[in-house]
Image (cartoon, rainbow, N blue to C red; front, side, top):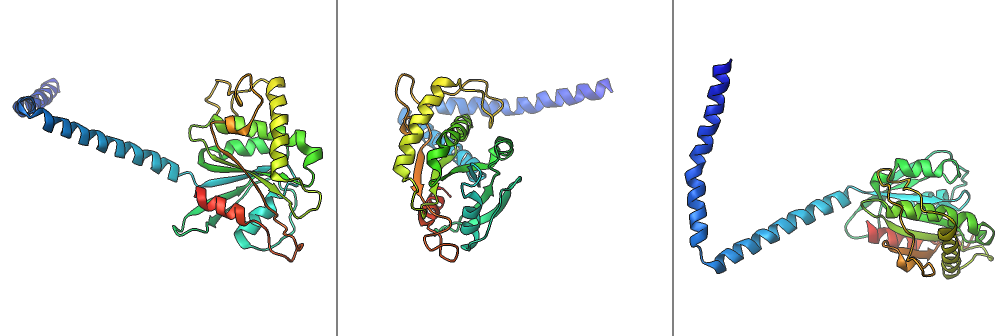
Length: 271
């Protein structure tokens, strides 16, 4: 056995030795090459390396196809989910589990996304966020614009946690705050909701220390929400937070069509 091992090791050194003259010859040719030509070769190699790296990033990004619909109970997430998939109205109820389906976006590329409607109950929502973190391409945070005034603190607290968690992920998802139920007369505008959320989040970051990310348990470094010493604004975040108005029910009630065109355009953009 020992002699056989010795022969294999010896053969390996012999094989390596056979390549040595070739390597020496290549080294001499490079040394004698015109410096300009050598610079071109190095530049081409750098470009190829960059393209390979970019392709790896794109392939990782393309594997993230999930759009998470999150929000408080009764914000209208599930009806938005149904409207996007079928265009039809359906009575919904509070769920204790997730629902998912493939959504074909309205663009010329024929892309698809995996819509996932997550429970809004306080005892379940963070648990389900943890479960689907690795596939999250985007987060749609749904707000009930009609009851926002009385729920603003609860909305801000949940949004605070979702933002902290999203910022802690390696691949930061696209982020949308969908101001739903705009068909109701007392609904607040997206602009007003943004302003009030900025005030509440500013108060929260002062009164609460940023806990380690729920979505990325490997991170132990607290994430700072906004810029220290300045009043909080969404524009300070490293991820772009967009706002839009929508109505899953629609202006004509149950039988009418939903007002979700802007949401559909946003999904087509991030697909």
